[in-house]
Image 1 (spheres, rainbow, N blue to C red):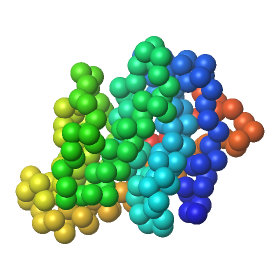
Image 2: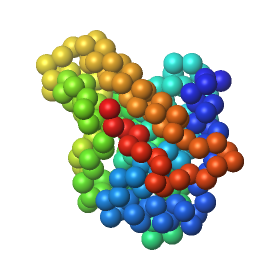
Image 3: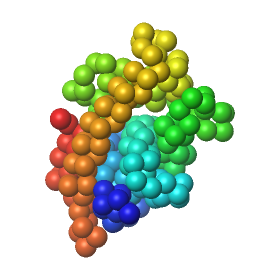
Image 4: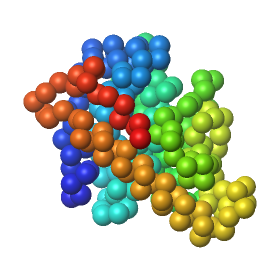
Length: 206
């Protein structure tokens, strides 16, 4: 198994009480709390990618795509409705992986997360060159809770690029995203350690 994915799977699950406290802080704008949830949630992302039976580069791509779904889920998660984050985020993670691995097929209703009233502003695009960020924004519907993920052909029409150019730009953007996700692994605690709220840092800052 890929070392990166193996290390994500080794991240210990967060207990319900800590998750509830961090999720409430994240909804009030606490950046460290939000990033602690991202770190803990990457275990679910890796699990979902493994369940798809993927290996090698496809497995790593699925993890990167799933991380986008995880972040969108965290930004919409209401901990006071009684569900655990892993349960709520599972569909979002899978939908984001579907965009990546069936790129020329628009998402069906069963795969598309329901739009929410809240606005989404994922930090993973911060500092990324505009061309790369624009492709990811359109491909995965980032930045707008009502946006529908688009196949590469439509993205190319919007940005004046060929499908091959969109694919190349997307691959470059995903490599940058992989570097940001690697920071999550580096900061993740061992299985014997709790996830410290104050020491997570800004995992997606570059």
